[in-house]
Length: 145
Image 1 (cartoon, rainbow, N blue to C red):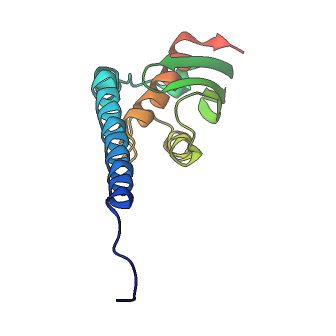
Image 2 (cartoon, rainbow, N blue to C red):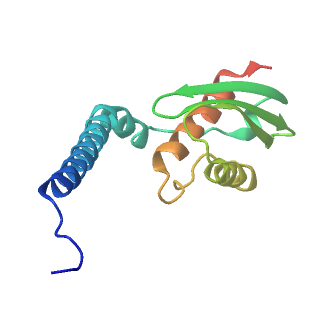
């Protein structure tokens, strides 16, 4: 009889070992991710529930002030006030949020609305609140830059 020889047990056994190895590696990654989420949940919950003070921008003297917040997200901001309005907010350090889309949106909402009383950006409550808290801290403590 001619034709293709039947696969040997050795070839099938090698494939099974590879598949089992890939499955085990995947399971370890899933478990590690789950543990990381559980460990960080407390800090993220705290950031979601931050209370942001209602700061009257018109009462803040002209100047540039530094504020910071360190939680799940960490922000270091420079807030510029001129004529009783916030004219600019620069993020000096944003160590846990590489995306600037959310932070740019929050900064735009603060400057256009002249208030820290705004809804969180959809899907980014933790980041929004942490940034608002850093700006609040700058305006309340008024540490000049």
